[in-house]
Image (cartoon, rainbow, N blue to C red; front, side, top):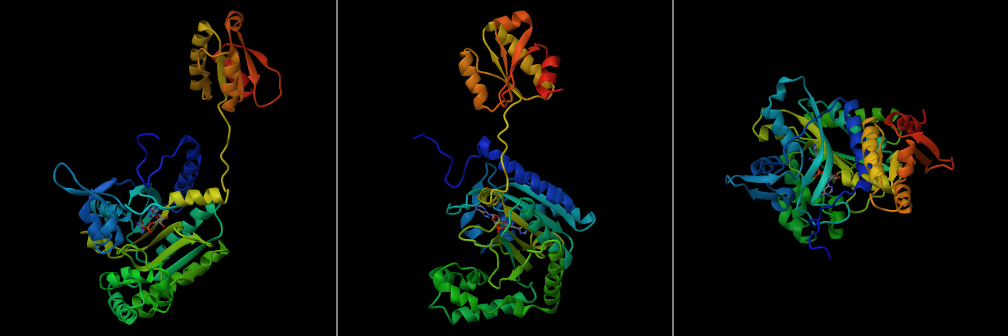
Amino acid sequence: MPSFRAPRGTYDILPEEQPYWMFALKTAAETAALFGYGRIDTPMFEPTDLFERGVGDATDIVQKEMYTFEDHGGDSMTLRPEGTAGVCRAYIEHGLHNQPQPVRMYYASNFFRYERPQAGRFRQFAQFGVEAIGDGSPNVDVEVIELGWSFIRALGITGTQLRINSIGDAECRPAYLDALRAYYRGHIDEVCDDDRQRLERAPLRLLDCKKRQCQAIGNAAPKSTDYLCEDCEQHWASVTALLGGLKETYPDLDYYVDHRLVRGLDYYTRTVFEIEPENAAGQSTLLGGGRYDGLIEEIGGQSTPGIGYASGLDRIIAEIKAQETYEVSDAGPDAVIVHLGEAAGLRASALAAGLRAEGLSVLTAPAGRSMRAQMRYSNSLNARYALIIGDREIESGEGALRPLQSNDDQVGVSLSVEALSRAVRGD
Ligand code: HAM
């Protein structure tokens, strides 16, 4: 057993896995560009207060999952558990309210939560997230939902469902929370221990409980959409009407109003949504987000609306593989130079440099091995050609170029970068 392993809940992405990540990241960047979202990068760690105030003291994330440390200057820092708080901090810090609103930004990077690792749940994970800050209109809610849906479709993933809800705002939420607490107090003996403890501190979270004994009680609980104030009610009506319009482009975009969808972060107001595979089991939410109209003010800015989502790229890649939406190319280098003897080794190295400078992918086979071993190596890499150079070839000035992907005969090619480059390119 090796003495060191990647920490629990983390993983290495080996070279053969990278094409999936490059595909997902490229699709994310292209989709974001289509919608006019520009990339933002924020630090991997921020002052702990930012998350305590932004994400919320009562959330599982802040209570149990943050990687918090005191730095050498005595300041408490936290590895970011999510991206929205940092982006909002940057929006305030750089005065982005002076730009045309909304400011549309996206990010794709790593986040850290001390969670119990299981399939689809890691302690270091990657998210592609988007944030539209500075416009409270329902059109932006639907733009962000469309962005999420089209990202998933552009990856070739199908069979997903959109769940949405409105959890109101600072005006109407208190009355709803009172109703929810009163309802759950009436069922206090039936719910699980966790829920009993959470009831006063975070009553919305009870709706999200996955325990069997809590399901029927959650289903019959008061619904936030029945308690919306007039503004939230109007916003909600517009969001659902606008969503209907997306069906022209995405006929399979059926949304499902889930009264128990509340999300695990405290900053949400009004619209919340998630996209998951239709036959979801366990940790499978591909993407989740919502509106956060109070967050920027909460962390010290002017009152500014915002909405966004984040998509877990680890789960996205698992789904790409499960649905086989992306085929990894097994193409190898253009050529491997097989070289026998000292003079051939020197020539091979110089030619490889020249050909690479011409934009061809060329490797030299490991020195000091037999011709057979070097040919085996070239085949194992799936190279298109082997260029064979020995003492005889050095003398004649002509190497043997052998196609490895066809039955064509090998040909003699002058040992110059120009001639070889033309032959390998097939010009
Ligand atoms: P979240 O629901 O905590 O929201 O995370 C969003 C997505 O990240 C999840 O749906 C899931 O795909 C992925 N994810 C979360 N935790 C893990 C984990 N431990 N392992 C693997 N994947 C995970 C947020 O983070 C919000 N900041 C989203 C947002 C942006 N809301 C508004 N703007």
